[in-house]
Image (cartoon, rainbow, N blue to C red; front, side):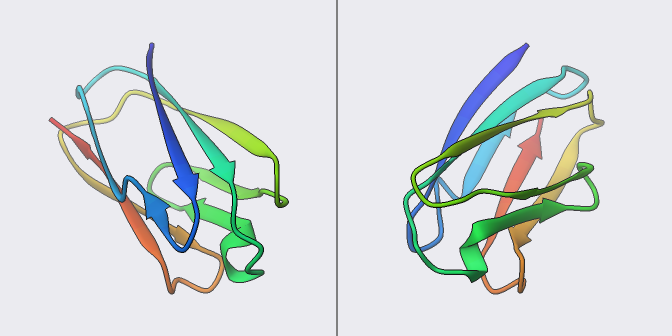
Length: 86
């Protein structure tokens, strides 16, 4: 299983993750931003919608994906990140 960590602080850091296609992954979102917009991270394409309070973290498990670019965003779609499956 692949793993990655994304820091939420004024956006997503890193904003782009590169993962191997056809392998499941766990992404841990670490919340360091008090903005209400960034308190939610969601992706229809990757199948998650999570609220993450300040000072906490949430790990989402993603099923294996075909090669391509899969976006995720905050609750108001103002900040975006992407997972690139190669």
